[in-house]
Each structure stands twice: as C-alpha cells, then as structure tokens.
Amino acid sequence: MTNNSEFEEPTSSDKRGVDPETGDVREGAPVDAGAPVGDGQPVEGAEAVDDSDTQLGDEDARLLDEARASIVEELEQAKAETEQHKDALARTQADYVNYRNRIQREREGDRDTTVAGVVAKLLPALDDLDLARKHGDLEDGPMALIAKKLDSAFELLDVKRVGEVGEVFDTATHEAIAQLPSPDATESTVIDVVQVGYRVGDRLLRAAKVAVQVPQQ
Image (cartoon, rainbow, N blue to C red; front, top):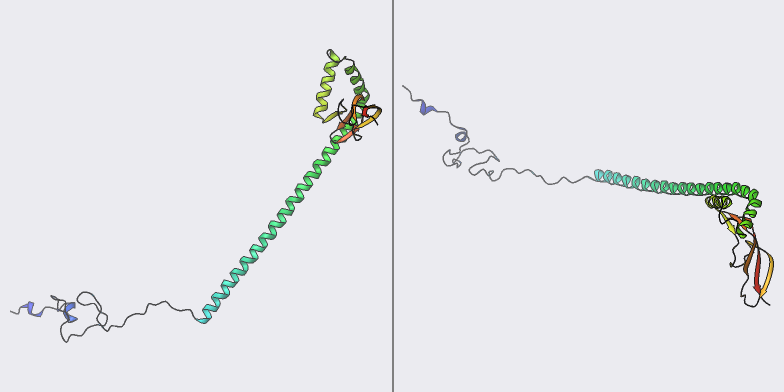
C-alpha cells in the first residue's frame, strides 16, 4: 500500500522556492521580480515604477496660459460693465430725486396759489376782525370763537400774519405810511401796525401798512 503523504502537492511557497518554515528563498530556486519574500519587501533589483509628476508639454502650457488670459479678460470686462450699470443707476436715482422734488415744489406752489386766492377774497373780513381785536371786541363771545377758528385754519394752511410792533422795518414785508423821527431811535422800527399783512408760504400776499420810528437826522 502506497503512502499518499510522500506524494503531497507542493504548496505555493514550495513552488516559488520559499521555505515555508523560515520564509527564506531556497538556494537555486527561481524568484519573481518584485515578489515579496521573507518580511514582505520586494526583491532587490526589481524594476520600480516612476510615479513622479508628469510635466506639461509646451502646447499644453500654451493652451493653459491662453485659457487663463481669457478668463482674466472676461472678468475685467464684467467689472467694467458693472461699473457702467452702477453709474447708470446713480444717474437714474438722481433724476428721480430731482423729478420728485420738482413735482413737490409745483404741488406746493399750486396749493399756495389756491390758498392765496381764497385768502385774498377774505381780506376785507379779516381786516374787520383785526379792528375788532384792537378794540377788545374779540376777547369773548361768538366772534371770539370765530376768530380763533380762523386763526387755527390759517395756521394749518401756512397762512401767517405780517407786521408786529417792535420789529425792524423791512421794505420786503412792510409799507411805511408814516415816519416818526426820534432821538432815541438807532434804527427804523415799527411802532404801529395800521393794516396787517399776510403771507402764504413763501409768497407775500399783502405787505403790512405800518408807522415807523426812524433815527432823527
């Protein structure tokens, strides 16, 4: 009877000539280049793979430079267009602000014109109320209430009385109907308001007729 143990198939290590017990290469056995032996290190003399960075060729470098230059040019063009749009937007905003201010001035001018037309028609009645006020007839009673309501309405409409005793004479708002020289006067001063003037906004509706005290010559 034949013992099968004597004809066992050699292992892969045996086929490579490597001692399975020590891991050493058997003398005279063929060895694959680069195959790990013993501690797993490649066999000395095996061909190594060059994994160094591949250098760009001249044509590739030229194409890369052209692409980079094209991107920079497009970026500069986009920046220039952005600045143009910003300038156009700023001009549009300025035009809008000017237009809005002009419309506002025109509206205020139209309003002042309308209010001035109404107040001009009321001047005779307002003069009568001023005379009554001077005589103390508007201290109480129904007329005092009417005068108070008129004053409140005029305040809302930006209608102001012109001419107060003690203020400096101003030819732009005063009309002097009498001049009284005084040795104590150092400048022309209103000492009496004969007829009150009125202003609507910046528009003078009627100058105040006043008596003026002037320095004595």
